[in-house]
Image 1 (cartoon, rainbow, N blue to C red):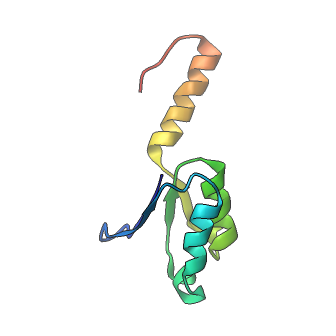
Image 2 (cartoon, rainbow, N blue to C red):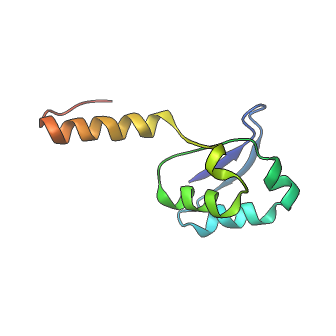
Length: 90
């Protein structure tokens, strides 16, 4: 699922079941060049399709994109489990 919102106001801008890279890219491509440039930040999970869609569709996305804390912590603890052999709950 993809949810696009204004991070300052919480206003929902787009919601869809876009499970492929085309979904986020299509949404971005509906924006004018001025609207894409005006986007100040992007928070996404670590799914490669979202990251690639952002990088391919938004000018300056390399400096504007962060990964959400939940997915970073989940990945960290998964790696801890692999190295220690001890299950960890999040």
